Amino acid sequence: MRALAASAIFSLLVTLATPLGAAELDGTIVGVADGDTVTLLDASKTQHRIRIDGIDAPERTQPHGQRARQSLAALAHGRSARADCPKVDRYGRAVCRVIVDGVDVGLEQIRRGYAWHYVKYAHEQRAADRASYSRAESEARSASAGLWSFSDPIPPWDYRRTSRGG
Image 1: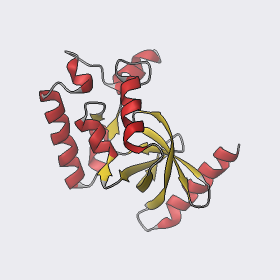
Image 2: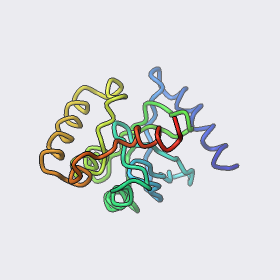
Image 3: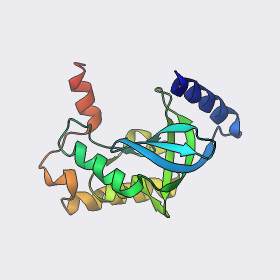
Image 4: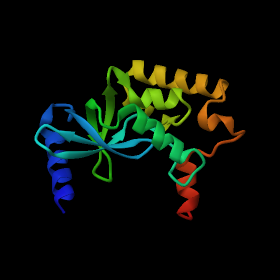
């Protein structure tokens, strides 16, 4: 219940934060749910569930799903982070570009081959991020990194649609 209330308050704050509805969060990454979702604890001890902007990682039950989670944990867990959050998704999570020690963790997940560039939402990214994420995915594919070691990896959006029966 407390997490739901915090999420609702965060959603309201994001909406009111700036004319563009963006918010910035600083804190420590205290949880990693999967390859594209983390929990950030801010200075006021409020937890923020964050969906990393611009990427989609394999689901936990997909091939490389656990490796994607482990990769993100190695990059971010227990570390200070800054999150630039332009929106909130339909599940109440902040959608953020997350920077840890100067590293864009979403971009690094793509480089390592543990996430796709989420092209469906690429139009919402800054042009420079859109270009670097796209290039990183192309390079990871060419290098057969991570999930690209499979001949035809199933994108998580297709996996979710088939696993839900629709």
